[in-house]
Image 1 (cartoon, rainbow, N blue to C red):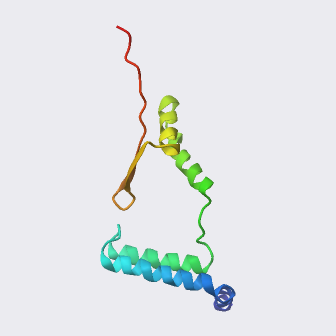
Image 2 (cartoon, rainbow, N blue to C red; image 1 turned 45 degrees about the horizontal axis):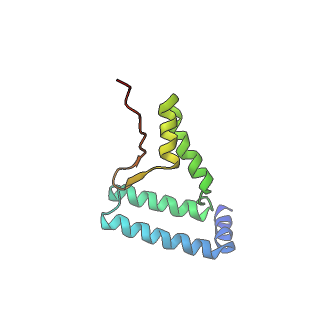
Image 3 (cartoon, rainbow, N blue to C red; image 1 turned 30 degrees about the vertical axis):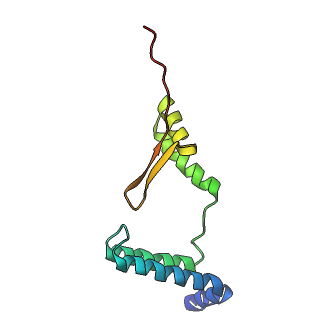
Length: 118
């Protein structure tokens, strides 16, 4: 029965299945090139799992508001001004550099603090 259901699901949306297969081929090419941020074996396993999840209809893009909420949740570990500064960096960074592939994204926010009076 499971095989029939999975076949029916693929037949119901052949464009999605073709898109998933195309993405899988891109992912595998990246794994084989050595340019992914994972070792080849892990990369291939993740590509196969992503293909299986896409065929089940489980890979969907999050709404932009969901990304923003996730970014702000990262600031929950801070208190007071540190939290406000973190939220400012997440919402309106003045500078962004790096990538997930390079190991992380650095967001910069500048706060000008007046010097104390003499």
